[in-house]
Image 1: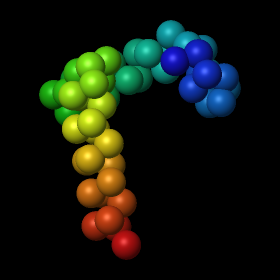
Image 2 (image 1 turned 90 degrees about the vertical axis):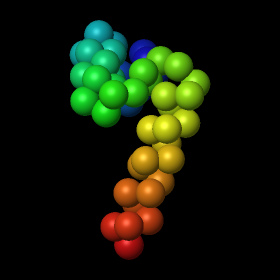
Image 3 (image 1 turned 60 degrees about the vertical axis):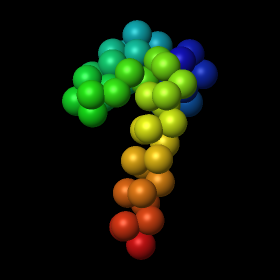
Length: 51
């Protein structure tokens, strides 16, 4: 979380809050491995459809 915040030039709590909001909007717990896999699959599908 802190590394991502550093790369984005944001405070770590801002990144955590945004990830929590994103997870709620997708109905996925992004703090759990299953939720992370679902999010990665969704992002991959979105990228493939965008091409």
